[in-house]
Amino acid sequence: MREIIIISILYSLLSSNSNVGIVKSIEGKVCVKRANKILNLDIGSILKQDDIIITKSSSAIGITFEDGSRVVLGENSIFNINRYI
Image 1 (cartoon, rainbow, N blue to C red):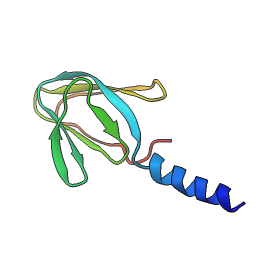
Image 2: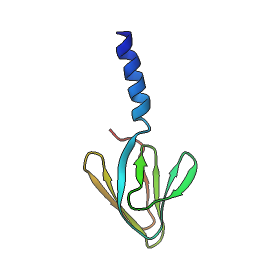
Image 3: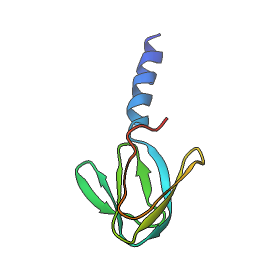
């Protein structure tokens, strides 16, 4: 029983910061706020839970999540991946 609890705790710790999606298309300047850092995104960039995607003027992004669902954001958007199950 103790082993199951330890495995469950490790899994929850690892999955909380795991990859949840990938940038499939990008237009203009799009960045991500991750752990109080601002990073520029490019096609192929990996997205993680708790990322905040920010599009600027004349910008757009297409994201494909691990489950195959897709999101497209237009200019001047803010999208918070606060919970991905």
